[in-house]
Image 1: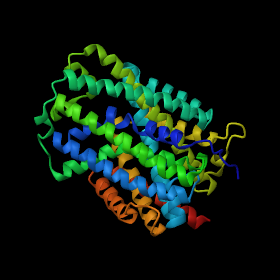
Image 2: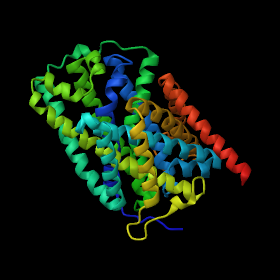
Image 3: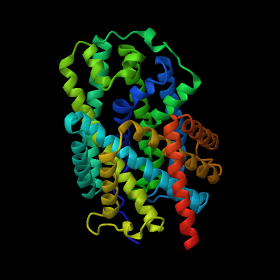
Length: 412
């Protein structure tokens, strides 16, 4: 069986995790999340989503250190629970993250060329796929550049809002919202945190995975949580929850409200760069999960091929790109976000259930079993509190995958 080359250390793995997360929440999710709750509720929802992500990250890091190969929870579920649990996780991840890729591509199109958003989105998918086909080393290098630019743009928005945006503290405590509204917002915001799993799905390409993965995952997540909280405080403080909820480009509105409309184009460019970074890592992670599933014949075995020179799963990359392009041409960005959140939360529920089978870990100071239980319960709670259409669509597709698995097993 062809193996991927181990090239990534802690810094490169952290950068890929940052590139997978930064952008999705800041530029896509804050507005619909704010629509479900008030200013205080939004900040609570960010904290809830971040805590559930931390629980999931802890479980993911422990499992990835024990099973350092591509595939993430698809592999962990198979090894620690059952082949079906692994299949369901892999199916949910591939389907959900394919929808995420389409949402990111459509966002790029909306910022770059609003009149031809779908055409621009297809071009973005093709360009990012070409970079990924060049090898994971090039992916990490490109992501480093994107992350640096995005952090600079976000810093500019925060400084503009704090110095000239008339941040009103009372807006931060206004309209706490219902408990269900906070959970719905947290479920949507989880879409913005889920990228840390890309580090685990790249486990076969990480040097010294027992050391690198447990360090890289919480580092990437901690940086992103801090950035999201700061940006959320500034956005709510400047715009208020109602205006934030109605905004199509919240961070553009922040600099405009600060009396700096000339910076709007910089923010739009930053949004495009950020989402491109997310798409770059998302496509790489989905392809590697598909690679792991193909190796075990849960999807066509032809997708298990690894390029002999570039050491990338080139057929899986091309297959994912083709499906994303179809969804881009037919789908809707808001529905894609909710659908993706639902299926990926189920994926992480299986992650935590798998981590509970690892037993105690005396080398870790954290209460890892308690965190796994909290992550399992929290993922399911957030999933069922998403918008009804997202819940129905997500569980219907998971059921379809389960039916396919049962039919395939009967025919084996």
